[in-house]
Image (cartoon, rainbow, N blue to C red; front, top):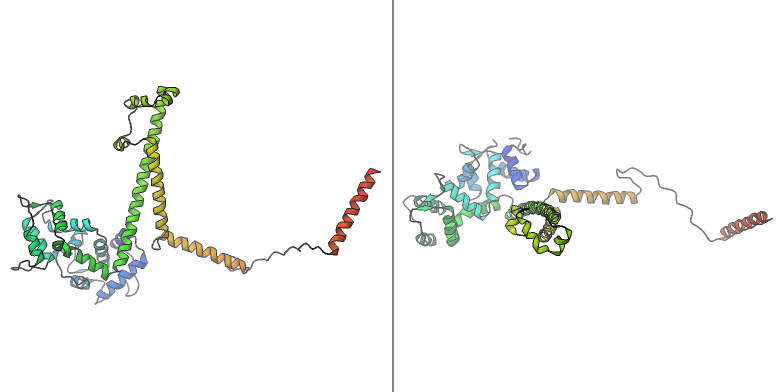
Length: 356
């Protein structure tokens, strides 16, 4: 994968992780340093046991599920691509995504539900209950309070409800993510990254919504134009209540009919969407982690550098500039008065000659 110090060229998995978390090569380099610390034999591979030991977790089918999810096949060790991709995916999971991940891991048959035996396996894995042992304490009390459907099939909504009612049962599912976040890059870095990704997601949704509103407004404007032509200018403006008669002839757009908004309301929503999109764009630019902010800072520094160089008589590249000669300031001394007097005398003589 490369030398001990240099970051290797990103493979497909590294590129996917970079795209998912919007990372640059500087961030990848930090992950590479952590990977090299675990790569004790310097063979660009780390043992799975070291992978779990670094985050202070016991190896389990729940933790190994991330490799199954990402189609990672391993024989007890993984490379840098698998290492960074598994960490990025796990750390970027939101609450509901973790619940879906749990359901995916323990739904062995992938039939859309888990049976009671599989649910028991989930809890035993989370709380490190070995063979022949039983849950104790609050998790055991919470387990007794569970209401399993009569058919014994627990679907995802049931699992989500159980997790919300008995958080102590599902707490270990979030522990592995928290340990990863603390161990790699820090919890604040991941939280900041999640906010950045959410802002980008919101901005994309706002732009999509704004585009839909613009299309709806154009369609409604064209529809009203047809109705106005059919009714006549006078009836259209003096009898606006009769416009709905032509809705069957010129039906509203399906999306517009769903929210039942008029052209004015659509225009107002479109205006608000533009303002919100602009606000989010400004937030993205002011976020120091974005490329736009770095480009802005570089342009600003270049302008300041050029300004200072011009004051010193230098060009943008440091070359000497020709200093323009300053014009002699006007003076009010006797020489100026004499020149003005001679000029006036000359004009008087010319005028006198012309008059004669």
